[in-house]
Image 1 (cartoon, rainbow, N blue to C red):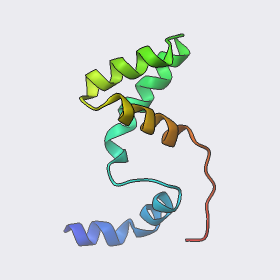
Image 2 (cartoon, rainbow, N blue to C red):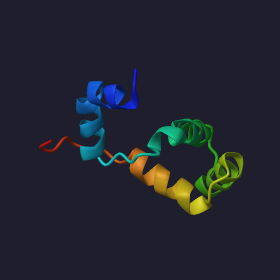
Image 3 (cartoon, rainbow, N blue to C red):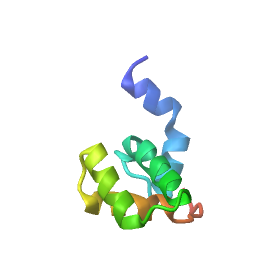
Length: 80
């Protein structure tokens, strides 16, 4: 399968994700956000969780805050 074929096959779900505010590199942050949710349920402070995850995933704390905000936001489908 070529990249074109994969994109064409997955076009509708990809368009939906983009309309919901998804970004191209969001896939790599799924584990980061999952771990953030676990840490919060365990009672960790947000600032500690952010610093820990930024170090673990080699991204800035600002990037972690951005991911938390975007992934935690409720979204609705608009016209695609």
